[in-house]
Image (cartoon, rainbow, N blue to C red; front, side, top):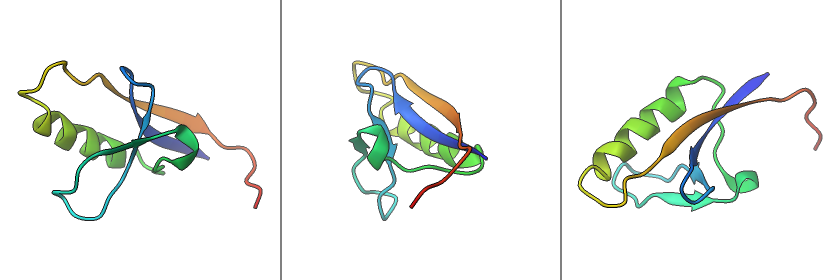
Length: 74
């Protein structure tokens, strides 16, 4: 199974979804970040974040990264 995450290449942290569209962005270590099973999820978040950060410096370097999960253990 392939999953997708959104990474900030400047900080090396990953995006965690929050409730509400006006909540502040939360950047966390990879093991605490949100995952999506379809690419449209992180793409939508990336677009929204880029709109929020459009006038801020330094610019955000956001990247959608994919991982293949072969086994899930509890």
